[in-house]
Length: 101
Image 1 (cartoon, helix red, strand yellow):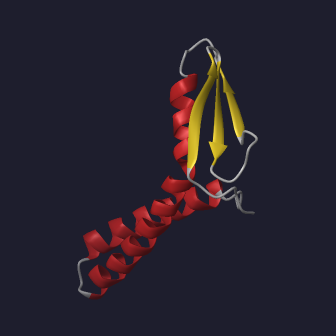
Image 2: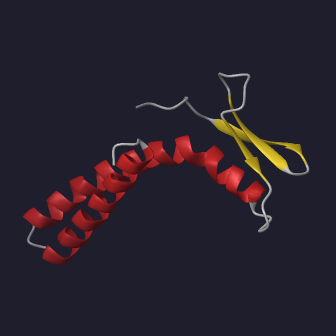
Image 3: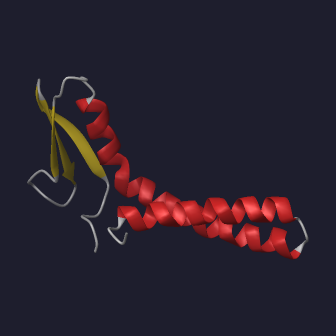
């Protein structure tokens, strides 16, 4: 499953709605409406940042796994184990974002 390429931008449509747009589509990718919490603008900004965050998480996960292997080979069990755990957690988040879980 792939998503619309980023970057995405949040644009306030009116007082109770913010829409998410990409550079490649005229129609909104998502529409975020106001709720009782009043957090809809923050939610829209978080959604708009998703493609860039996913890309950076993929890079960070690969780098972290590479460092974990090095630390493990060097006999540094603590850092190696912690890095493997973090890399695995990031991998699960990436799969969730891609609809693979």
